[in-house]
Image (cartoon, rainbow, N blue to C red; front, side, top):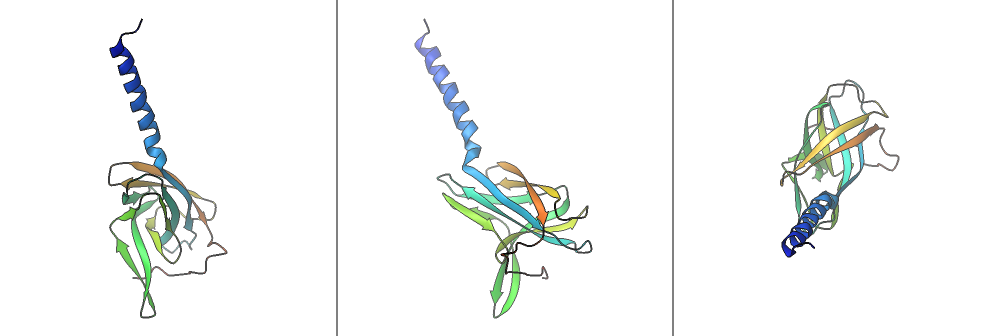
Length: 156
């Protein structure tokens, strides 16, 4: 016969294992892609959707890839008829929402690729959140979406 303490310990361990296994399941990353660019272009744009199905806000603080020197978060804005981009230090994803990096809005700026970025190539990107959680995703290099009406240059 088991003692009450061993039963409680067993339930506690199951609780911890269950919660840690599902902790990462509150973030879902999908539709990751990088816009193909000519080989001479050293600044590219990346897009993805991050779903936060938790009950707390998440703060995305960095992105990195072995294929690029650095990655920044940017937003495209039109001011007085002129399109401009502004770097964002962090991205806050509200609880139970999906944050989209998309053409004409927020996007990843990928600087100085180490290899050619041709259509069909997969690029590994690691996202890091303020709480220390990291997520590694593959973004496929492709030509602009046919539905993409927001063509913008990456001039600052």
